[in-house]
Amino acid sequence: MSDLPSRIDIQEEGPREGFQIEPGPIATARKIELIDALTETGLKKIQVASYVNPKRVPGWADADEVVKGFKRKEGVAHHVLWLNEKGLQRAIAADDIYMFGSISTTTSETFMGMNTNRGFKENVGVQRNQIAMYQEHGIPVTRASIMTAWGCNFEGDIPPARVVERLEELLGLEAETGIDIDIISLADTVGWATPKSVKEVVGAVRNRWPDKRICLHLHDTRGCGIANVYAGLEMGVDLYDSSVAGLGGCPFAGHKGAAGNVTTEDIVFMCDEMGVETGVDLEALIECARLAEDIVGHDLPGKVMRGGALSALRRDAKAQAAHA
Image 1: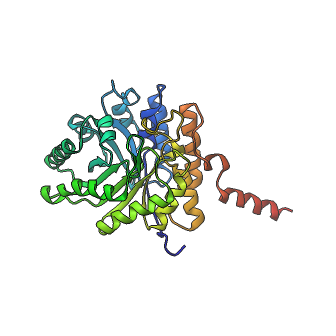
Image 2: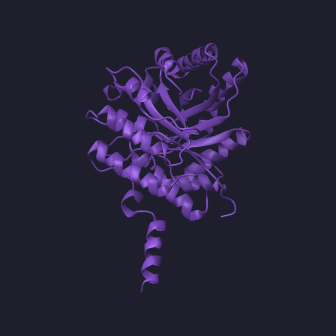
């Protein structure tokens, strides 16, 4: 275990990701209830809402009310997603929201066309305009993200060299515009990653940009989510996006019932058992996962929420042994 990081950071995306994709209306108060519960678990960064067009994403028609309603806590960064200047202006107007800029691309031009209705060349211009908008408002641009970093249902397997090539194009804007990207986010958007390919892509990106911190945004579409996290840990990756109870997913994954993001409490459980610090209270997080399932009204894919924490079982076993 000596090659593993001693501590990792987790960026919780469940509320935004999950409530965005759920088909049924979810009461504003229940969204706030989950956010407030997650805020008390020790998580330090939670994505709480999407400032998007309510006609296109009706699940976040109440984003302003949710952001106004949840409890703030010192040391916890709550942030939101926005896709255009109108959304950014809403975020700026909100009270005590963590602000940072991000630029993005994908390895698959077909996926980009389906998802954003543009190609690689046009995307560079769009990202350049995004940077200018952030700079105008004094928001640091710190993150570069690449979707479909391992594969795409439209174009198949993606070689690591193409990941580097597309990131070269995106990070070329760093010197041009004077921004300072700290984090490269690699997203397994439609669930093509395996432990072997995680190591290959992470290795290729780290070799090219050894000074950048890598974040893994992994999905559990084919059941490899937690194994892929372990592969990332073995490569020294110490930053992960995840979702409580496995809320959320990608509409391009190819199967209506496919699992979404890798589950937060499953990551925390595995790290706890390996001695990797997360700063998160696992038992409190499990209760959040069960709450999330109650809120959406159907089964969610998390495993530890059903099996429970071994720490609790150990306490019970020790208590029973003491009274035997």
